[in-house]
Image 1 (cartoon, one colour):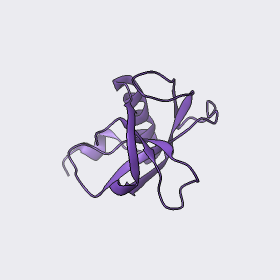
Image 2: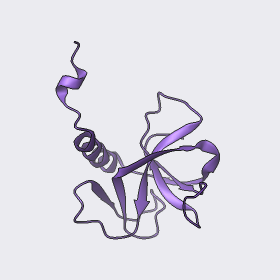
Image 3: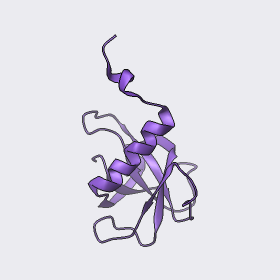
Amino acid sequence: MKLGDIYLLQGPGYGSKPRPVVIIQSDRYVYDSEVVCLLTSFNRSEDELSVAIQPSPLNGLEKPSWAICDKTIAFQKEYFDKKIGVLTSEEMHQIRKRLIRLFEITEEDFSPE
């Protein structure tokens, strides 16, 4: 599992059918879970913390979707069904920008104390 991969997820208490998620956890950290953004096909174009993703052979999505950057969650790896695709570097850049805004990460956060 790698940053930007899209998987179908069937977790406990997480809907009645497998749902797509995008992995947002760095590849440097290997745990028994992965941090993801939930994907939805409901139009969230007015939401400043969502990123529009158009379906493509690369990402495996069947309809226009939105990465909901304020809906991040960690799931145990056993709940990931199968990889369906991967996002482009530009789509991941847009997700990163929303996560930076959501968590108010600034340049000072990377400066030595």
